[in-house]
Image (cartoon, rainbow, N blue to C red; front, top):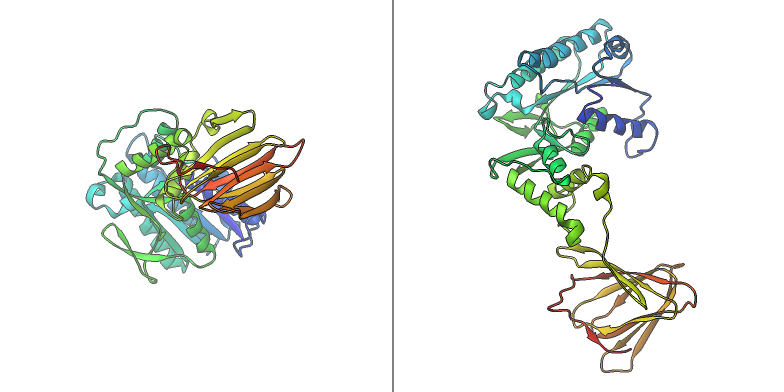
Length: 397
């Protein structure tokens, strides 16, 4: 299969092309697709359009204009190129499927009424539908809402990209209405839908006002997963992400949640100097202890380094429980039930990584059995350490 991507250097185009390349080069084996060539078309490639349209087996038309110097350029960039593309395909009798990247602004309702950008997109949609009907060609028209994700250009046409870039780089942001709600579509969800088209698994819909309504026979196509989020919520989450290196607290980011996708987006805008950050090491003659990461509801992770022959721990908890995971060195973990002489022991090593429960009501320690090597232990506790309620009591095993 030979794929033509117009607007290949744009935000969506870049993400789509690298995903297609992963499939082509067998780096992504989750798809059954066989891709032979990817034709990347952008401004300055006009001399290549004829060849690409003659040879391609599918077209993703992502080319368009959304920030022209004057309003007249909307129609030229969004309608005229569509006409050129479809006429070139028609000249070569190439009946391959064609996808169009349109915009929800084409609905021309509410705040989008009178939008010249929306008018140009609607005109492009109509010529697509006519082309498909007249030439018996499958066309896939998507009206995208606001997009966000890695590689999106800040201070251009995505408020999320602008906020991510500015907050990551300690620049000011302006929020005129924290209650303003956006419909947001994450780039990876969009790209998955694009690849679904190639496997005949696209999602169809019709529109009720500005809302996409699933319909297997619908005229339009859509990405089922979008998020309705206020500007205030976006800023709140981004500020939490910014504070993470200082607090070590990772915000709650459930699978497939907006927060998870926004965090990935935010990280892609970090400058080099913020990509690395120091951790506070508590160092003494026995070794060191360093908190690594804290969660809002699921405890915290730490790393403990014990010098040769050193014993650490010698304490117990009423309710707190932990995992000790030795990742390097050779040690012995001992646990004794409080009020008894009952001791259980576990010899542990980085050569065979195992997780050992530190049981509530058992005092415990960890001993470095090596005479030459440090003992490195990753530790997880089910709750964040609270100095006012440490639930930690000294007692030797």
